[in-house]
Every structure is written in structure tokens, then in C-alpha cells.
Image (cartoon, rainbow, N blue to C red; front, side, top):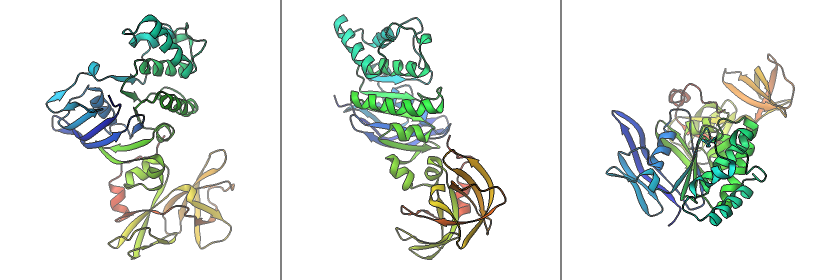
Length: 359
């Protein structure tokens, strides 16, 4: 059986509330996907749909060639050959590391169980911890045990529900890279749910940014960051600011940072430029003046909140030591095609949630 996952136009309606609306995406065997979005966006409901814990109102879910969910049919969770890794790891406290990993292997002979446990212990770097109990190992090691237990029966699809949320940031990012390597070594098809873009970047081959029950964009991390197709995606994926612009021709946009050549022509009179901090430079001389409002130290650089002469706010990163109140000159250094959305800035901002700064 192919270990692929496919959702076709999946909707979930609970009472009068449309929780998921027209969700479609596919993962090939061995691919890692991520559902990325803020709290309440519908990503956990979508994971429950894939797990068979939530009925759907429309569409289909397929694991391999088998339809496991449609409005008139929901294959039970235990028949779906899925593995799950939870936020709190959910390890059995009275079982050792080896016994936790062996929990789903009861259909194998004792020799087969021993071989499979040894393979996963080596793969997850748990050598020497086999006889310890969960309370005797670190949080990162507990996460590896939970992953090994979920992978032990060789599930068709592995589901991970915010698996790193209880760990500190440095450990989360390190472990995310390690878990990706483990999943690739196993050839596992997996889908991760998270609100953290950095986890998504570290883990996934394909990322779907979800908000208000809809996937706004599905693609690889590079494309989501450098070529977002929706303002919400641009802002949620990373820091940045929207700047009002006027179209002086279909392929040229006039902005407070100068005229911008557009990669594709736009219709109408107005468009909005999205600028990330790393695309701005503090320069000694230049036509664009700004005032420093706030600074935040980020180790290798400062992150400055500045205000242009027309009052527009921007964020710029620089290693130069400026202080609030200083006047400075900035320049736009486009290394990729500009991120531009049609329409007035006020219309775009009205459609955005109040706070979109990712963790």
C-alpha cells in the first residue's frame, strides 16, 4: 500500500460554524508536510480529520489508494495505520524506554520486536537509555522515545501535534532538524501541526499556511517566504511591513522607498509593497530619511523600528549602533522580486488579524 496522503476539498461544519473550508493538498510517500497557522485557525481540527477523530461534511481523505473519510463514511482510527506524536509525549510512566517503543509491536515475534527496538534506538540516538523510565530522561530524549514508539509499527502516515511546544526554543529547533533526519531515514510520510514558522522550515518539505479554516498557500518554505501569494502568509511567515504604493504604469510602482519594477503587471491605481527588515540597509547618504523609534538587540544585529518622513513605519536590521531619536538614511536592496499585493494598504490591513508576529 502506498504511504501517500491526499485531501480533496475537505470541509467540516459544526452546527452553523464552518471550521474547515475546501481543504486540498497531497503528500507523496516519504514527504513531510506541515500545517502552519495561529491558534484557532483550524489546523488541529484538520489533523483530527486525518486521524479519523473528526467527521467531515464534504470532500474526501485518502491514505494511499483507500478513501478513509467522506461525508457518509469514516474509517475508524485504529484501522487507518497511522502513528501519532502528541504535545505532552504521552509516554507510559511505568514502562521503560524499550517497553514504550515496543508498545505497538505486539503482533511481532519477540525476536522481531527486539530487532525493531534496536533499530529505532540507534536511529533516535537513545543508546544506553533502554532501561530507563520517562522521568529519568530529559525532555528532548522523551520526545525521541515518543517518536520511536510512533514509528515502531511502520505506520502509513505519522501525525505530529505541536510535538515541540513543551521544549525551549533552542532545543525545539535542534530537535526539529534531528526528527526530520529520522523521518527521512525511515521513509515516513508525516504531517506536522505548529504555529512556529521556524519549526515548519526545519521539518517540512511542503508547508500549508492555514487561517480561518482555509489553506491560503501550499508550497515549499522558500517560496512561501520569498513569493507569498497572500498578505497573511507574508506577515505570518516572518517580520515585515506593508507600504502604500501607486501604480504609475502596470509594471511600475511608486513607493516611499522609490519606484519599484514589478515582476508582473498589475491593474488598478494602487498596490501594496511588503518589505522584510533584511531588504533594508542603513546607509551614510541617500534620499530616504527616517527616524529611529525603537531598537531591539538581536546578537549579530539590531532590529530597529523606524519612521519615514511621510509617517510610514518600517523595520530594518543593522549592525550599526543607533539610538531612538536618531535620524538615518536607508536604502532598499532587493535581492529577489518584490512582494507586491494589489489594492490599497488600508484594505489589506483591515483583513489582517491584530497581531501576526510569529514566535
